[in-house]
Length: 224
Image (cartoon, rainbow, N blue to C red):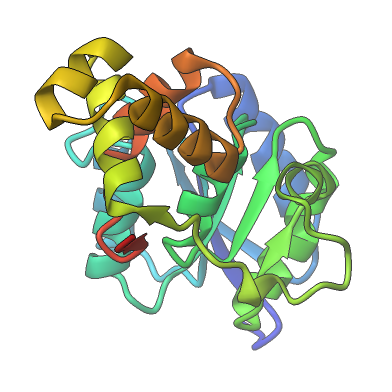
């Protein structure tokens, strides 16, 4: 195999997407398509027996033994440290995108962008770079040419994190005020501040954020 052949595996739970991406990648001369999977169990089985340079994976891919989303990515990072990862996603939440980038993935491509963006993403990942497709760049406010590697995860204070976690658990501002022995005005202010930092405007997005991340923010929490 030529050194210019990048061994690529693709994982997605949608058969039509699998078929389309497989066909598109097989037409690229610099890419050697080495397999695909429809859940994390199949993916890990194939990674254990197939040499792979770059994995292109859907973010939401339920049904496997190793989960999906952040849980799966964390497992892959621990188990295959040399594997380059490009995430294909429908995600439209800037806060979640920042958390995803903090997982040190090598690229993020939106499913709303043309599939052709996977090609430069794969090449960038293979070269130890990072690629964001146009829709992803727009969502997180990164201009083409900016230092993508310099993106920093959202910084929440300890108290903002407490409030967001409790809101995600279903508590109201009044209930949080009573539990934490803080005024409703203070709790509301911390909620608003956290939502601005996370780039979200609706309460439902708080629930989604807490569910997706498990508030795994130990490295991004600062003291007031």
